[in-house]
Image 1 (cartoon, rainbow, N blue to C red):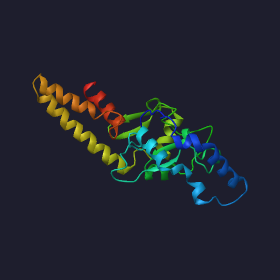
Image 2 (image 1 turned 45 degrees about the vertical axis):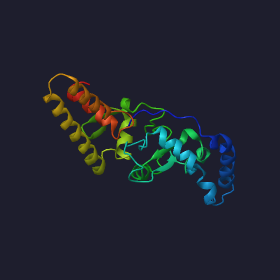
Image 3 (image 1 turned 90 degrees about the vertical axis):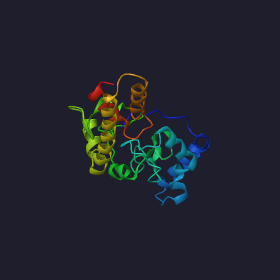
Image 4 (image 1 turned 30 degrees about the horizontal axis):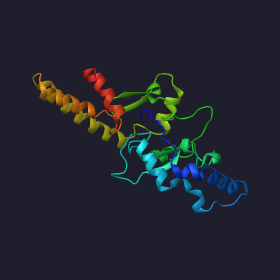
Amino acid sequence: MIKLSKFEKPTILKEKESEWAAEYQRFINGDENVPKVAKFRYRHPDIKAALREEAFDKCIYCESKISHVFPGETDHILPISKRPDKAVEWENLAYVCTECNREKSNYYDENEPLINPYTDDPSVHLKFYGPLILQQTNDPKGYLTTKIMKLSRASLFERRKEKIEKIQLMLDHWKSLPDGQVKNILKNEILIEADKDKEYSAITSNFLKAAVRW
């Protein structure tokens, strides 16, 4: 998980957010079943495209690349089952993978929230050991997030392990090279693997810091 920044609100939301929010609230207040078209306004293609771009096409929680394997989901940081007033609020929408969305479910606690990578710096609450993500010592928000989201579940552990093994092979090759342009180019290629748009960049950047202090 890495720190993210919200992009500018998409035009469709600038034009329709108030109308859609009021529409949704009318159905909720009237104890009616919300029609599908009103319930899923937040899944508008323009909204999803903006969320996908600001998240680097990664799940905001586990950093798995999404679109090359799964369609990806537009969902709510605070669940609309608990906060229907935020059904189409731009700051409450995010691009997530199916697994993290399922694990998070409708968890909501004002006093004990999960990490929000748009408003929190995840590195303050989490620490990274190889493919593992753990909470910082005595950090309730980090603990809740790692446990509820299962950020070190088996499938994630294996994929991160493969990423680290790839980086280690590149490092071994780099170390074997004499000083010069080839070695410099390879170093840059390794560092690119820790860029924000790369899968599991938090794990990679912390691994490089520990392995070679980059």
